[in-house]
Image 1: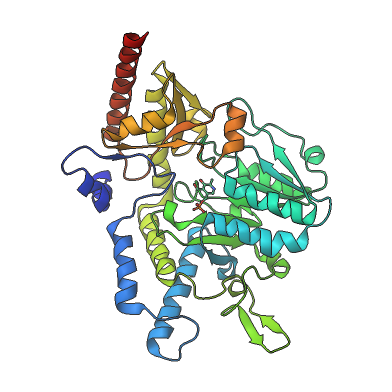
Image 2 (image 1 turned 120 degrees about the vertical axis):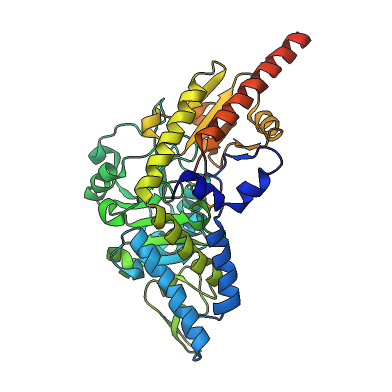
Length: 411
Ligand SMILES: Cc1ncc(COP(=O)(O)O)c(C=O)c1O
């Protein structure tokens, strides 16, 4: 599919740009959805809607097959060996909380150490702080360098008493791609289990769990063209026997008596109650759409575009960019502009129909480290073009020039 054809699938982009320019540079927050994905959700309700796993009638069986079919699609998408490794969750946040409740709570004890990196999203910090208080665990942060990369460490020394490493694949602020192929085996050699937050990588590059071999990996559908309200927790088969229920109730049980309950095996053990059925089905359609283009092709496009964005931003003397060089980053660039607060900048860009994000992007410890309270973030995806970047850069320069003129009038 050519770029023009891809963008045409995104009705929201086409409609918003009919009368005036509209440039969406906030896909790191949530991606837009192609019409194939939007239609899939409607198709579920029009043709397949029934509760799964319980009905004796044809429609319920069809719904069950489609739900389990989506599990199979996700399994293939991340190259998992076993569909039982794929647990549907509420999203990345839901997946991390599930690992905390259903694995860490039962497998970690007093004095055990959890390592988080300094570039984690709050979703990969707060659940561990709460568990650490509850279970008397310690949290240790893996520091980052000036250029926003993980510091070189001595794994034997750094990972003493460490039982779990929780690490993002791609930083949602710095854009840094962490070298997981190198880190995961070295951590596991020290007896450490590894949880990967794939929220910012899953839609932008091939993610292969047989290559990476994490113990857990989590992501959200809404950042990969899919619907909100659903995500995935991958659990390595070697962890299956260590999993306990997270939420409890219907669907996750084998048998309930007045005295006790026995549970279903993975993955249904972790899918209590009625799941977001239409959204799981729709996630399957998003997977088909991405696979139809090809994740390598998507990665190539995103890399070229983010490189171009990085180069253009670097040429503006008032702009400070956070994070590594363009060839070490994925999909996004965070920056500040001299004398203009990121919130003001986002508001001013909005006047030109440009959507960027400003604030701490749910990464306050990282912003503390960077010594700023907020940054502006522009992020790109498959539907963005060089023209989008050119328009954004042009308006950014104009805003800076206007701002400088205005300041001269006051001082
Ligand atoms: C790196 C990272 N982790 C976790 C999350 C949380 O994702 P969700 O809000 O979909 O649960 C995000 C969302 O921005 C993210 O960028």
